[in-house]
Image: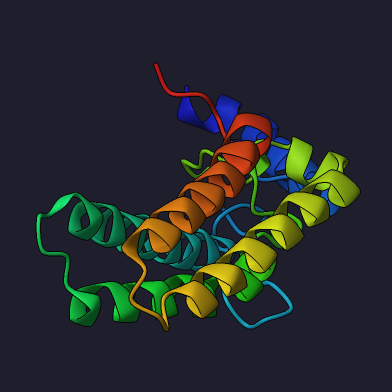
Length: 167
């Protein structure tokens, strides 16, 4: 029986290869090379790592502001991480790194369908993170807290529009 099915399977495989089609996660999925030299899978992993660092930095600042004696020595490095990551965020989403890649991601296809909207959301984060950095050079914890709220609003704006909603 194996001999009878081998030919049709080979033909289908050749047709898929000729059309560039493969199963998700294959060469046209997670193993596909991007212009930046990373595979789609590597890019998504880097994106997720960087976004977790952003989230952890936001949490550090927020947690410090809840303390009775917040530490600027803890707040300032976290703010610098936010400020340094924010400008790069848009580059973490190159074409082909969405759900179509067959790799788990919370990025919605709307990122690539509405590039102007995504760019506007990104620019809002960059602007607010720079303001946070400026405010964090001082010692006004109320001002830092207010600006953390503005950065959080920029994050929420993007999550609401371009990220898969979690249950």
